[in-house]
Length: 115
Image (cartoon, rainbow, N blue to C red; front, side):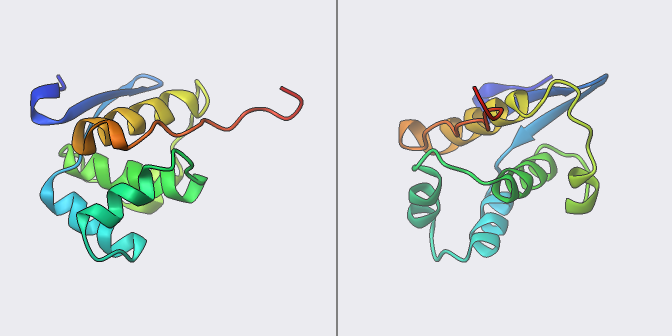
């Protein structure tokens, strides 16, 4: 069970329940992945509220590993999204807000064309 006081966020994908967490190691991995020098630059990067699907994939994979799941980026990329992207985007937004505070805005989930 996820514990928000420890920075953990639950994510349900189909019949599997996951825990997301941005540990210090996860944050270091994100700094490297996004080519930034420090946490402030990372917070600014996510503070726009605009994330690409590649950003969400990387954040999800790193947060899953931080939450104790042994998954590769390739495995995460193959996850089915039975309820669409919204639960993933919401969980990513929650873990960013827990980690960085209110400055890290919620990402805008992709909207279907014509919506």
